[in-house]
Length: 151
Image (cartoon, rainbow, N blue to C red; front, side, top):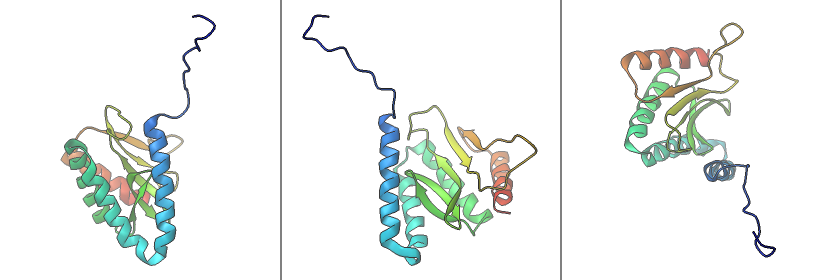
């Protein structure tokens, strides 16, 4: 390298996908403020369904099934987007969410719970689950976890 060349810079911060998710979160907060409390519930549902429709087929199939399971097993949860992902909230706080493998270019999708979920089990328990497909047994387990999370 000569004196006029600059060394290549490396960046150890957020990925392009992470920055996009943060930007989406900012847009979600602005939209929620504009809507007010009355429109948030209906618009949240349509926002979630829109995000699901944008997913690649493999993730979309899982997300559609999860949406149906969550709405049936915990109707008190309000659908909303959260960092551009389908999420379900109680009293405005996200209880659970679905992260498409496509969103952050990972090898599997994730169904996760936030700290407001009542899924505690002893001194250590899982808060996220890798998903590649959903079996009947998986759906049953998710139903149990979602019901427990909102109890």
